[in-house]
Image (cartoon, rainbow, N blue to C red; front, side, top):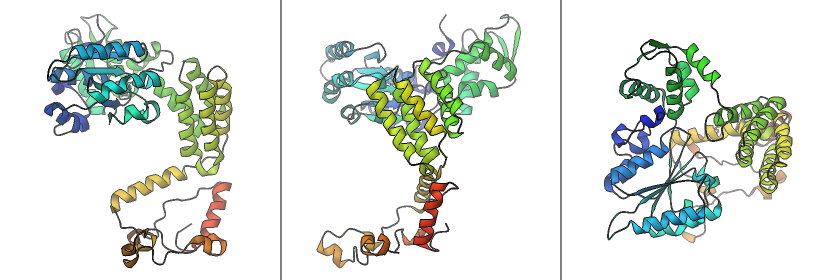
Length: 424
């Protein structure tokens, strides 16, 4: 019997749940489908949000030949054979066949290079799917030829709708007497992943006789899931949960827990680049200016594990993880950019003060571009008091030093330079 997730896979755009920003009325992908002018693109999002399903629906809606490759099992030879097949399927002014590549981030550079000509010449329309940031994993030449569309985790309402649809329409479940009394555990374990949600519903529904009434509660879901919980799966099931525990252990300054979760990922076959990238992010977001060397350590670790590879890379990762976990913590840089972006969205595109503008032409100089600017290095201590923000937001304090030795020194310098301009 096919899994519930496969039985409930939608085949038409009207049946697709979620991603309204892409496929809702007037949204960008909906317009491309309606017009028939479909660019090559990459769908980037977490597992179970409909990347593969959406690609299949698009091919079905446009009545285009559809080929699929998995980056896990396919090589350059498979890519070339798919392209040759696409060429043979084109007649006169017929639209391009669609080549869907799942987990495209796992393709090597040579495999991605083999796609370039066919994408550029229009032999195929490429749709890639990835759970990883394409900026890191897809070569620039291919990325420049594709749009990137970000898919979001499904909302609570969307997940609840999927459960009700399964109970009402699935050929096996609709005949059962199933009542869901509590949804919290089911939603929590699914984590916005429709495939995982269907797996949980099917797992729980498989217990008990078909003619008996089944009452689903949080306690039943938790017990059944924990009894059947899988080993770490880098393709989806516990991938994000363990990565989250890893980062939170670093943030919480627990080197023992951080190394434990690191070991879980390594033993599960996780890509060391995935681990190292998240350490770079943690070094900036959670340690920041409390220990600026943390970012250097994490960046060097990322480079080192790429050069060395497993098994030795585990030692490098362990050293860096312990260093990050035992470093003082500050998220002042993270808060500063978040505050700044919020201010930009609220205040709009404020004009750059005249004295800060560049003046490469005589006309600009006549318009007072650059007039009154003080070159800091011409002043004692390499500092000159002047305004650097737009007048409308003068005095806005976005960076707020936190209570640690490194940032206390920064605070003292800022107070010395800016006196009462900023409340440090």
